[in-house]
Length: 438
Image (cartoon, rainbow, N blue to C red; front, side, top):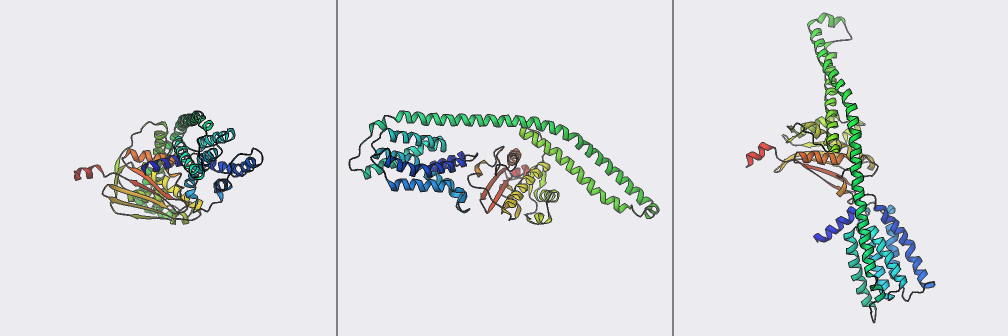
């Protein structure tokens, strides 16, 4: 069973990066090709054997493959599993069976070459080999069961070295394709690092000015408050300005200072993850519930209704060792993704839960939005991968994973398309707690 699961995972991963459309196009080709060749082989090329039922099953399988956009939402998560059996039936099984029943021949050999070509195109090398073996075994068994005097078509067997060469060559081509993709990703990283270094330099200068200006304002406002408190007569005479009004500006100044500090941390994180140079961030012990409260208060909500869709369920004294600013960034990223999922689904809520377990703090962010297809889940933490493809830069979740990993924490995702998405962060026990337990 482990081998089968491994094969299916490779098959799913193969269709992560935009290849899912290949199945639909293959379905369109098969929907036209199988009935067309049925007529062609009966009326023009006159093959010794044809079977309407076998071709009809292949045609129906391809039609359903081509109509994936019209599948009910509840059935779409099963599309990849369905496609596996359609590809297995329509390519290796069907063409080997028809070749055996027609005792080989140039026409059937050409058909088999076409089937191998499509199989290499539609599957990774592991599943290509597995499907060929399964298809050949199944076709041979059916041929023997339905043929009075089965025989081995020698001209077909003689072409096996060529078939093997096509399989190996196609697999090597896809391997080189993957190497090119990895090289392009590396070049993309280098390009982003150059751009971000420039942006960081340009942003730090005004941020430093804002930070310095707010510190000066804080001191100046404090002096004014002290002055007005000592000279009540002036405060009374000046109706528009009072110590109360001045004191009200202090939280706003503090907020600006905090956001400037946060932006500097964000720049550090971007550079650290893109350039690959590990920046050292100060690690302190923080209360997750307090960080959650701060994050929600500072998050740029679009409306009161959006803010009301988020609820918090937190235990007291949930402590972790981390960098406070970076943990806020992780939470902002996950909340932002949840808001997008709710926006796409036009319904849903978010619940943030924190608790202590025997292994450390556990933080869960769950939304009941559009969910993520099971075929996409293995890749959501990959750098530059985003789902849907045009939604975001594809670096947010990779940043979250790498940042959490630097603290010994792990993040995982569970989702059901159309129902929910749940991100779970498991923090390790704080250092002194580990020591107490030893």
